[in-house]
Length: 214
Image 1 (cartoon, rainbow, N blue to C red):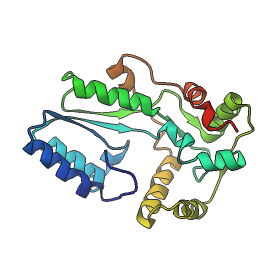
Image 2: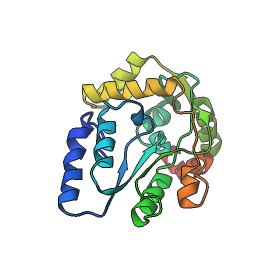
Image 3: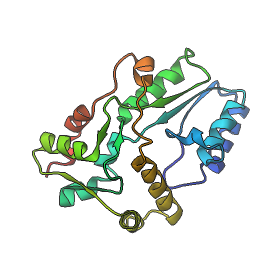
Image 4: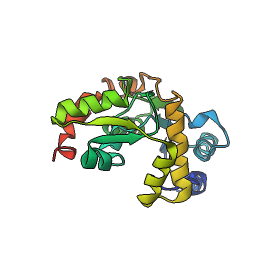
């Protein structure tokens, strides 16, 4: 996977693939993001295509939005104001727990069963941010609500948090994709690979409850 904060992921990751070939690495599991395969000129898609043509055994996993964003990137508004501030209206997402992503990646790395295939990874719950707020409220006992904000307000917040301008605008772009409904789709990939259903958003909230309890 590419480190966060960069938009030139192809320049960062293609040299890693080339080094893996040189060192005779047996297999690479590449994590990109759901939807990047829609446009071949997208930096992460360029990396995917390079890996597919590399001659290495590989898997590509494209997760949907992480549940863990709510106890990391979006946590300040939740803990300071009891609000989830995002410019996504009533759009829904099939959020996925990062622990499921890690388990899938480990299984693919250790097994040849699914070699040279790609998978979109999602949770099984398709919920909007009002529903996210309700779950967090019920689990924590706090009053947490979702507040739709303008993209310009979100951009100002991201820049204020120290994100580089190009990455902040990239975040705004993918949040707009969410708003347009591109994150609502679900797949059975987690269960197909791991043999168990994805972690629910309620279970995630219960496990990370301490993040939001004052």
